[in-house]
Structure formats: structure tokens, C-alpha cells
Image (cartoon, rainbow, N blue to C red):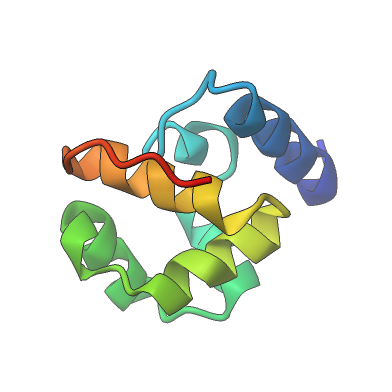
Amino acid sequence: MKTEELYSKIKALILSDKIQFPDIFEIIPAKTISEDCGFDWVIFKHKLDNLHLFTLNEMMTIANTIRIPFRYMLQLVRKARGDEEINIL
């Protein structure tokens, strides 16, 4: 499958609330997303193990790459980190 098709698949799963943040990388490898976002792979890999290190700008970049609204990305990361549930309109 082409990367664009995989991103479309991830987008559909995220928007239908059928996938969690770490599970995204079972569809598209983390290294591919890191490269597509222009992130340093070593730093990105470290941040995947320490989700609290992701900045809002990095989450925005990932959301733009996957083509989902930022609020969905923020919700995914917060849920993966175990943050308190906050509704974002």
C-alpha cells in the first residue's frame, strides 16, 4: 500500500475513534511518520517512549501529516499519556 493510502486509513480510524496513538505505528512505521514530518528519528523514537516530551508544535505537525484536525491528535496523545480527560470543542 502507498503511504498516502495508509495515511487515509489512519485518518479514518482516528476520526471514528477506532485506534489509539501508539497503534498508529502498526499501520505506518514510526520512522516513516518521523521522516514525513521532518523530525530527527532518534529524538522522535525517544519521545514515543516518553509521550510527555511531545510539544504542541510536533503534535500539530503529525496531525497535518495525517490530515486530521489537531484536536484529535491532542486527544490521542492525552489518552495515551493517561492525562485527565478534557473535552475540546
